[in-house]
Image (cartoon, rainbow, N blue to C red; front, side, top):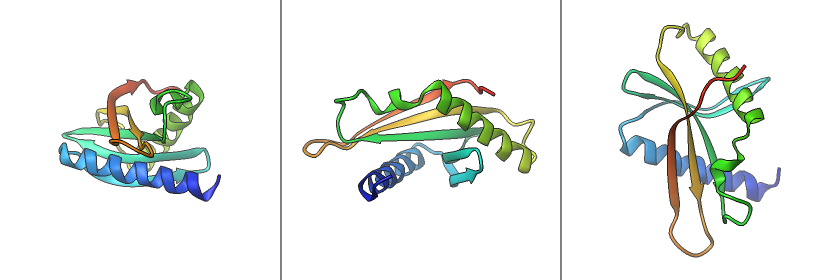
Length: 123
């Protein structure tokens, strides 16, 4: 992955984190990595544990950023979430999977679209 894409992704994650904090989310972990993949943000929304995938683009030429969260990606996130839940003994907690879509155009206003409970766990 190029430095430009890494920087764009990090910028999107920073914007998503700030957005979520202003809406009362408590950020628990950023960039939780395991062999099977990564979850961009793990947060708490009230009593609900939320696993958040952030997708960032500079244009919608190839679709909205959230459209890049394929079933394959959902399965990967689900497996990493299960690892987090198991390691932290959180089996009895309510949880959901959200996507935050960030559009950072070269000219114009940044758009953040939060899609709560965007998909179900897939193993």
